[in-house]
Amino acid sequence: MPIYEYKCNVCGHEFEELVLSSCAESPVCPECKSPETEKQLSSFSSGASFEDPMPSIPPSGGCGSSGFS
Image (tube, rainbow, N blue to C red; front, side, top):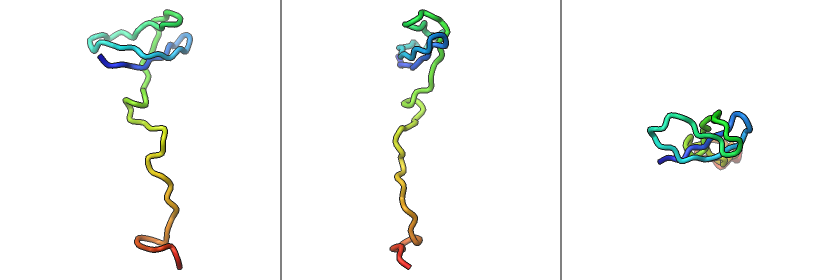
């Protein structure tokens, strides 16, 4: 069973829920009991990262150049 992240459209509470793949309905909010919840795109499932994968590299004088003129 996968874990999904949800957000309540009524109270704004964010929570995680184990969901059966055959279950098409969104879970009820554990805070306000509203059925108006929406699945969120998690950083894990989207592959997003909070870190910059490519560090900044200062420009140089070109390929193989030491940067001196």
